Length: 390
Ligand SMILES: NC(=O)c1ccc[n+]([C@@H]2O[C@H](COP(=O)([O-])OP(=O)(O)OC[C@H]3O[C@@H](n4cnc5c(N)ncnc54)[C@H](OP(=O)(O)O)[C@@H]3O)[C@@H](O)[C@H]2O)c1
Ligand SMILES: *[C@@H]1O[C@H](CO)[C@@H](O)[C@H](O)[C@H]1NC(C)=O
Ligand SMILES: *[C@@H]1O[C@H](CO)[C@@H](O)[C@H](O)[C@H]1NC(C)=O
Image 1 (cartoon, rainbow, N blue to C red):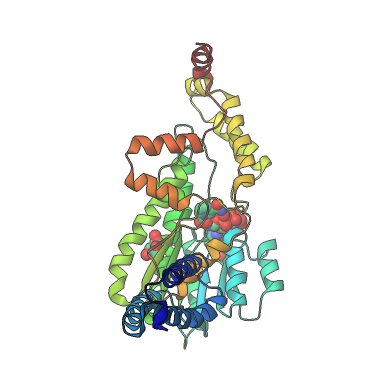
Image 2 (tube, rainbow, N blue to C red; image 1 turned 90 degrees about the horizontal axis):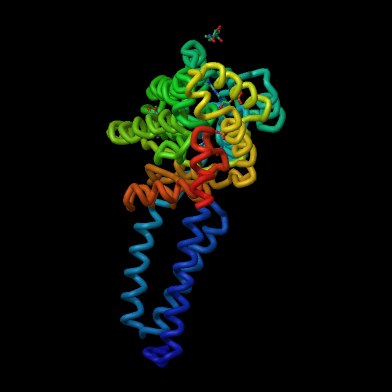
């Protein structure tokens, strides 16, 4: 075997091994829960060991092999997932979108799912009833209604007496109408806070006693817009930022109880959260009616209509496959060492990095380019076209 040592062929082997290792590491980072990983992680060390001994000689080869094993054990220890067993999880906002998909996904994996729905007689609830296992229970749960939160708590605590509640996923949320912060009515700011922040706080506070018993997990579906400023998301982003900050503080405070908390900041996914054309017409009309006359003049009605067309086209850029979000939530629920923050979806991590590590003017420039609309307020339009003609 030592004939290989130091020869070009030996170095080639080292190169291939390193490349293989890096690729597999990258793959596991992307697909945390693929079953194939188990096979790969049994096969890889054996292969690496053989190659090390073959290229570096028995003695040095073994040293290198043992060191890399130790490092990967420490690293992978945190990635290992706990068994599903009979773990019970509460999800809010399971009528549609991410919450709905998540309820199905976790039910399929064997979790005992409590699916909180805004409307227990709605089509979303009906679909869950039809497609999921007997383990899944539907709960009427408007998270802004204290009575319903209390009732849900009583039902859940009665059902999980012996096993405890392992996780709470604060998913329910509303987007509101995305438009310039100056135009949004106060009622929209209040409504976003009411659902996205106060609702999630109330649910978390109510269910924490159960989580403390199980030393379980609290997972908040916040948003990319809650971590970085994005134009037209003043109300939504502020409410999600409040949620994210609350999450951070909770992460610090609840660690002494053995509860792990994670926040998920997805970028755009196609779920229907952006609303429908008829809903938007109604909201634009309301918005216009409540604006002071001079503001309405300056922006102009067609500016708002322009925003609408932008957001109706948005789903085309969004990912219809929700699995990155589902995988992130699963990791937050089951990993021995879950991350504090997950950023599933295109651009979510990148924009956060630019925001954190670059000057603000650069971040604003990039986001301005990314989130541009053709809509220009009426009062700015003439000067804009003049400057184009220069
Ligand atoms: N989709 C994305 O691109 C994206 C990106 C970043 C973050 N997020 C976040 O991900 C979460 C899920 O969003 P989604 O895209 O799946 O949107 P979605 O399809 O609109 O799902 C949100 C769910 O919450 C429900 N809900 C609304 N108000 C509620 C209340 N007061 N109490 C209980 N449930 C309520 C909604 O019910 P109704 O349908 O009956 O109104 C809906 O089923 C939200 O927190 C959202 O902010 C989504
Ligand atoms: C809150 O929920 C209770 C019980 O479902 C219901 O009777 C009540 O009308 C709800 N309150 C509001 C403000 O929606
Ligand atoms: C989620 O938010 C709630 C309320 O805002 C908070 O109590 C909880 O600790 C947060 N958890 C995580 C994991 O972010």
